[in-house]
Length: 133
Picture 1 (tube, rainbow, N blue to C red):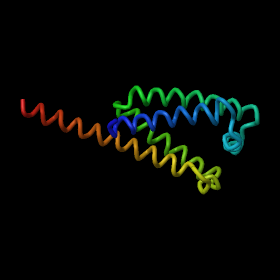
Picture 2 (picture 1 turned 135 degrees about the horizontal axis):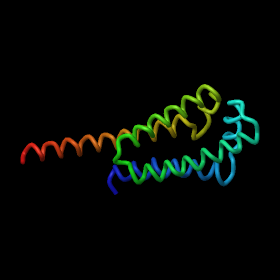
Picture 3 (picture 1 turned 30 degrees about the vertical axis):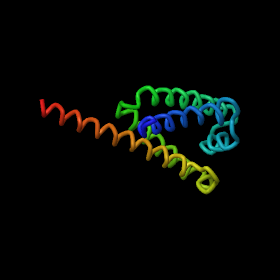
Picture 4 (picture 1 turned 180 degrees about the vertical axis):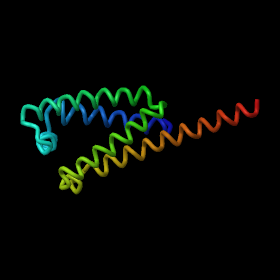
């Protein structure tokens, strides 16, 4: 499997995993705590968490299908950056936990940059081929 496909799978499946397991199948305590830190009630926090879970699964599927669309990859980078910033502001103690948002989000952003770099190289090759013809 080439690097591009590994990056695509890891990024997309990470979104799907984080949508299903800590949000849809069972709400992780950290998810509730994060939503409550924004002032949501317990009931609203539950609804926000479930909605976020569905959105993450959908985005993971979109990413896997449309990873060659630059705007999807940039949306991924922006989304991961915003989520990391929100954690840093609202629950900074999570940044030093094992398997924390820093290591997860930065790794996924790096894989997204691998995808963008591959896209750039492919575009340059296409341009060179067009110029030769």
